[in-house]
Image (cartoon, rainbow, N blue to C red; front, side, top):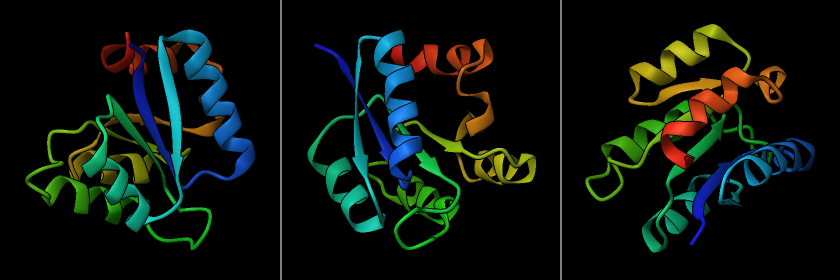
Length: 123
């Protein structure tokens, strides 16, 4: 059975790019959530090997790092690996401080280094 990845807050184009990369590189299926409410609902109802959260959520521009903090503070969800999708180094550092594993930016989607970051969770 394929592992599940939850992509949170990506626009249609970015979601398609991430989904394509993950599904062709790993035995994994990528589902999408758009904001904090549907993200938390999906995390409570299904099991995900990894959650990739955009720095700014596409629909309402909510802060992705704040959503990470909410996930990490929830006893039921805290062990779920989360990763930030952002090209900004300071945002990546803030995400790791909030409990995220090292993430990557949209500009690195096709790079080998991105696959290496995904491998421990999806390989």
